[in-house]
Length: 453
Image 1 (cartoon, rainbow, N blue to C red):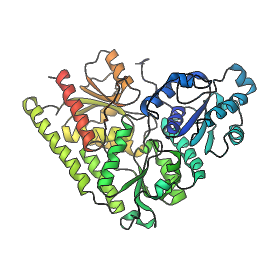
Image 2 (image 1 turned 135 degrees about the vertical axis):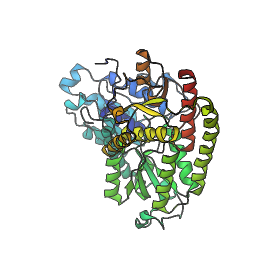
Image 3 (image 1 turned 90 degrees about the horizontal axis):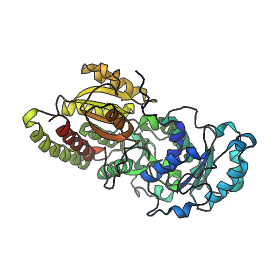
Image 4 (image 1 turned 90 degrees about the vertical axis):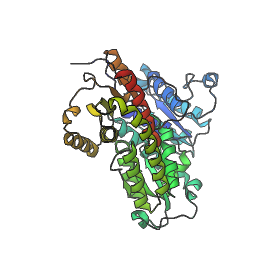
């Protein structure tokens, strides 16, 4: 059965735009039609607030169209025939006047066919500001491929500024003396978190939780490219002793590049992103083992959250035994789907109805997810279409939740990814660590009250 309302998965073009927009002081110039601009600009501004106020009248100039992000060359028919060089030059002059720390020109798929010499315009108009052009983000490629391509280009461009003073003083004189990453002599006892993106739900608070847990373990967070760092901090990314490919779908190529250029080792968390108590504990233990950190305080924080969860679970399940035995579905990247599925099954005793892995999923976690589902005799969940499979709880993006509501299913939807249903998150929420586990548990228990009870 064909479902024409099914959500369109963002591709490599969107991945590249959101990668650069996740750099605090970068200006992303979109070389393409106006229609390619509005969604990306709106989402970037709602996810990552760069300024405390916004006045549309400040962006009435050409290229911005009342939005503060992602100015566009608004290519038309003549530009596709004769080239858009004049517009590119003008838009770069407008971008430079706002004093960015990095400028990126990204072609839309159609503009990639024109053949304008973007590097020449950057050399003529941008001057000494780090800059790069992305001629082709990859036609119909995955979000992760475009994201990584843009981050790698940004890292190369940012190095023109030299090592960041902030990066050099991440942990003062605290250099690595223990753990398996200690052979990178002279590097700080710090990690780079790779794969976080402003297009991810609750990315900022997820990063804040990781930073708190790491600091409690005596380990600094050096950089998180694409998740709010500025261009200068990216220039010093090689100073950390360890890289963590948090979401392998969005970070393995970046990790390999940093390993080749700086000799920095990396690892992919075995249990996926730190979603759920067990995965969060495994995450801290692995980093502490690699860098010789003391994770006792971080692990105690997670254990306190586990104890709080028990208080509410024991009372909620005392009558009907819920949430044990309730059905859930997940739509996410392979690494996220594995972490959530294992936690809900092993900790809450819930049963997977449909597990939908997004295109471009990591092969390792795809296999691991399949093996886990087979082990608990729920292998058919990978084949079950999420739209046609009833469940009590659905963890997915807002569009998928809306679609299932449209088909009349009765369930509780929990947003774990974008596109969003439009809910404005004012207070910080997270999916990571003990706090994230409590947040998801809160959503599940309250949802079951209206779906099952």
